[in-house]
Length: 159
Image (cartoon, rainbow, N blue to C red):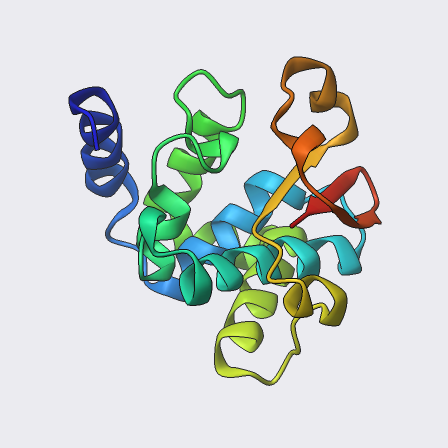
C-alpha cells in the first residue's frame, strides 16, 4: 500500500476502529445503502462478506475491508456521509436506539455475520465484490470490463 493510502487507512482505523465488526458493517451499510430497499442492504452486505472471503488484497476482516482506502466512498473524508458516520460512531448506542434505519443495518450485519440472514445468492455465487450506483457510472469506467451480476435499487453489482 502506498503512503497516502496507508495514511487514509490509519486515519479510518483511528476514527472507526473502536467499533466491533457488526457495528462497522452496519455503519457501512448505513453509509452506502440506507436509502436502498432491504434487498439492497443485503446485497451490499454480501459484497462486504465476499471481499472478506475471496479478495485478500483489501483486508481479511470486516473492519479491514470496510475501512480500506477508497473501497467504500462513505469513508472518504470528502464524502458527504463521512461526518455523519463519524458522529454516529462516537454515539453508537444512542444513535442505534433512535435511528430505525441504522438499527436495521446493524441487525442485518449481525445476522449476516452469524449466518442467520443469508447472503444474496446471485451475488455470492458470482463472488461479486464490486458495485456502484447508477449515478456514479459516469465518473468511472472500471465496470465496463466486468460482468453485471445484478441490479438492486440504485446499485449495480459486478463480478
